[in-house]
Image (cartoon, rainbow over all chains, first blue to last red):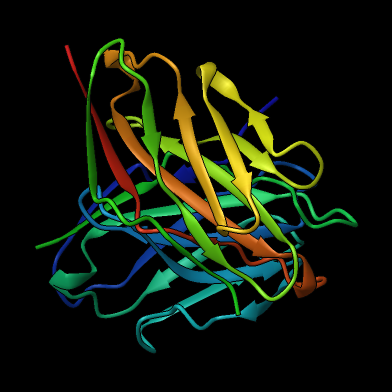
Length: 116
Length: 116
């Protein structure tokens, strides 16, 4: 079946512009996560959705970052007034929510964002 | 609160030798533990998980991990390393007591370099 998809795969933008990153999770996966990874470094948690609500937004670096999820499916991460330090690979993951809550996450290929 | 630590930024091992990538965790209740791998220029892939039961968990690509409750560790192991195992490895944990809250905490990652 289809995995997690993200678009665009690459995005080059100028400092100060807004960008939207899209994530299509695996069908039926209720949990959706956004992470940021800089140059092969660790995963920085950004936000977590359960259905359409976001119980944890604690990882969003500033108010320039926002995310939404509609219909319990597609999610969009928006970065306003991009800065050079926003350059990174943005990863999306989804997982089932079972009674035990121990389901693994399935990751998308990521969007590489470069802010000039 | 839940946390996970990967004490080694990089592990070097000769091809054919056994490898170990270390992970320790901290949770209030019982842990759900995961290992993920990120090959160069590829997305993260799930390797294996510990939920309950046998302390030795077997996963993909010949990897296994040993859960040690007294040492709060979940080290990743493989009896004989391959050059193709060279990648970035992430340990992750979720506290069983977090209930419906599905957030998983990832470690900072360990780069495994297998030397021919």
